[in-house]
Length: 458
Image (tube, rainbow, N blue to C red; front, top):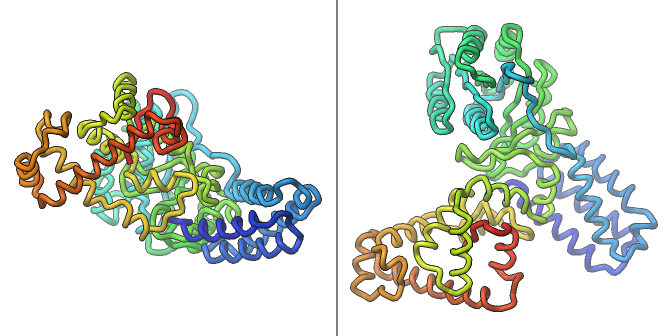
């Protein structure tokens, strides 16, 4: 996950500050020197780092901070505020044309940046907002790109317009507008061709499209994995054709994250969305304050709640009934299967853990904690049970367990291990539900999602 190294280093800096009763000017300077090194290692632009740390130092070295009751927390608060400001302070949304007018968006980016995937993901986001998007295949150089866009469009339920590879992209865009008007489509998204590097042919093609159809916003997709190069690419596109916003793809990968912290400051262009996974639903609006919270190890509870609300469709009475049975220790395998499916809809346990406050989890640690293969094995075990066995685990004698193991294609030892873990979870839930520990796993997680929301038996 991007930022994990930066998050860990910053948390160590703040831990050292908290260990001091009062802060001297020297304490702040030493801490900011470590912050500066951490940001540079995360591939944040040097000038951005220099201005960032200078601003924090000016704010932190003052009587109010130095003599306050909790100076360390005040410094952390200042870092959080400046980090948010660095990335844009507020969320920037794509502006649509008023009324029934068609909004034309042109997607641009280098080959391999994930542009076509991001284009389909974006169309899916618009569809959820009540828009009627049309995807347009303007990459005439790669037939595979047209097919990829069609597959993506089908997955998100958005039609794709294409004219093959024998027409100029500007001509395809013009014809697409006619189709959009005829079919009552109010957002047209042009997926243009990428290159391995910025060149004049690509820029001329994008200029021709803008000269032919009224492009209202040009959105650049850049790969977070390329670090500082992503900022350089954004700068070149802005200077040559003009861009209105950026989508940062692959932020869930092994990226140092510097692009997210540098793009706004260097180019002045806001980050609109970030790609946080391979699924077509894994495109999140970019909230600078929430991203700052993630970077500083404060979690991103708001995004977690929103993801739950968007991903989970469950009857409120059913949810309350599930929670009541969990508190009584009557949570059964049907409940387990339902909760596991809900968790997968939210991107899996790994995605959820990354948003929890204080969860600084490296990719290696996460792989050890959350084994997708084991989760699939668990689901296979439950699906191999009869409906009676799922609701009444006490029926599971050795003969039934052997039948379940054969049905799941697993060793009996794995089935026994899973059932034992399930029984331990039941006891834990009963203890937490019946006791006063409201801040426990289900007190804290349950209250976080609010009344009527599903709870997850991690």
